[in-house]
Amino acid sequence: MVTADQLALESSERSRNSIAIIAGEYVCRILWHTAFSSDPRAAARGVPTIAIKMVAILGLLLISALQAWSTKAGTRAQLVVTVFKVLAIVLVFIGGLVYLGLGRVVSDFSFDGSSKSPTAYALALFSALWTYDGFDQCNYVARDCKPGTLPKMINTSLAMIVVLFCLANISYFLVLPFDVVRPPPLLGLFILLIPLSACRLPLRRLSVSGTALPAASLILIEGWYLSGLDFGRALAGPVGALLFALIVSISCLGALNSSLYTSSRLIVAAGEQGFLPRLFSDYNSRQGTPINGILLSSALSTVFIIIVMHPAPRSSHRRLLTGDFSNLTLFYGVCAWTWNLLVVVGLLVLRVREPTLKRPYRTYLATPILFASTALFLIVLSCFSKPWQSLAAFVFCSAGTVPYYLQVRRSGMSVFASQDRRTAADLTGLFSPFAEKQATEGLEMT
Image (cartoon, rainbow, N blue to C red; front, side, top):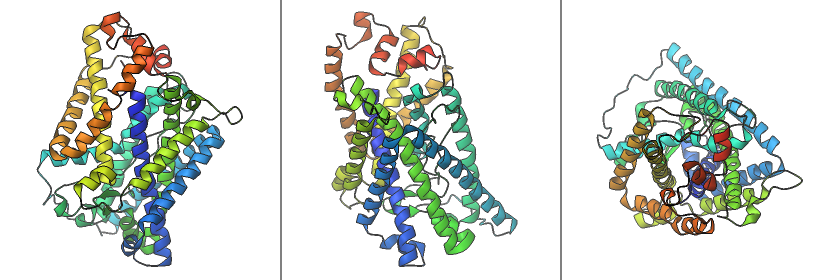
């Protein structure tokens, strides 16, 4: 299997590529709406694909330059953007309350036409769970956090985002007709409108943080758009549409900033462990930032942005090779949740094999069992619904087998801990540079 660092890095690149495309889409909508059309939907249809990609790459390069210039500048910018996003979601909720007070509420909350297929709900959950995917990003930057704050950051950020998103989604359904906020029936899916977001970055030396794309985010599904422009337009006309498009664009840039922060540190860790050339583990002596890691991460994301087809090609094979937004989400979801399943199953195995292992933090047994069951449900049903895309994800996961075995042999260890009696902490410490720090500070989750 691939190592945690390798899979997390690739998943991060795919996720950041999707966020960059959303940012490029909304910036272009603002420009085209202003210059060529008074109708946001007509402006969206008129945006050239090359323009979206150029804006996405430009935004990525700007964030990369900020991260390379100063870590402090990047984290301060993240703090500002996080506050902005929270206020934006509160604004969405207030807008819904105003609509409710004026008696203009859309009363059709029917679920007619929604899918009853378990596979459809599994695919929908991949998009929904990507919304909250940032909970695991905090672990990768644990060395930049105060001791003992990691569980507080994760729990507080997730709780805050769940509450905010529920309030925002209520406003969405109060203001917009149901036909607007659901995908067309031909897709065969019923997708709950949950904003694309993440609590992705624990700000340096802070105990609580989170970044959340507001409910004005969009979900791209086979070239169809569920747009925050509709919400803004319903509240305040064309001006509101432009305002919410701007909110989404800024939110995406904040998510890019936090995602790049974590992925560059993963590259540093991979360089330290020998999975990448040693030069990628270096920090710039003047700026104190991992410039080489940032450059590699940005280059990978740029390649993904270039090869993504938008809109999706009709050929299923071309979609498999190049990918659109939904395929990227599925690919990311299968990879990430396969690894999540293996990690949590490993936790359960350790409970049986090494019951006396020192555990500074011990989770309730029901939690990993429920987590593993959910992950297995998602993975199995996605294989039935999208077999080729799922197969591609599994092939990618298997691609790390050779580097993994080579690294183990260079380290003089056997592949399985039971053969050389190394402890779980020894194995984890070898492949994750953050594990030892977390264990000593009472943050290890196993």
